[in-house]
Length: 226
Image 1 (tube, one colour):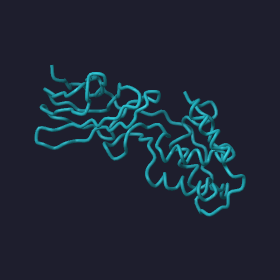
Image 2 (image 1 turned 135 degrees about the vertical axis):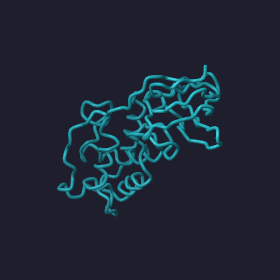
Image 3 (image 1 turned 30 degrees about the vertical axis):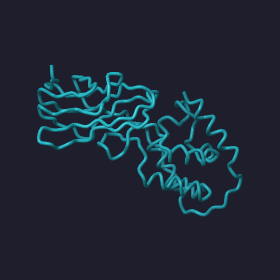
Image 4 (image 1 turned 180 degrees about the vertical axis):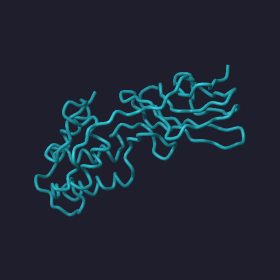
């Protein structure tokens, strides 16, 4: 799964200078390690699904590759465009996090004072919202009854891009999920930050054809159009 990514990282490391001059105040110990803890260590750790980037010694050789992969949003593999819908446990990097990583790498990727390194904390299992029904959307779907949307599950092909939108009867449009070159290898459910009530007559639009499917995860008592 990660063979191509590891190959890219390995090639990038060959061009990494042994002693880059330090021209930044952004350090691994203060800023970057905390970003990595929030966004990367769930996979990039000992026993994880990818090479470990937990310590400075492990991450430093990959610095330029980390910058390239994060700026292209290939990593972390969240899959959704930020700002189009709001989700729980959003793994996508913010613009400020991207800028910090870029500044750190371009400024020589310094360690900083180890005293500022974050203390390890036990991993907490994610608590996902409860839902009872799954409503498949292919093409355009008009809801016959009110539903409370909890989350969305993509069932699409490799590198799919689409925008899922809820068009309410009064004319208001609610952005639900924007996939950009989605990679099913990293498939996961997108749980809304706040459940969204959609009235009867709402049109769910954005799935272009029957070869792609989006699954709406809805609460008990909700019902799709017959």
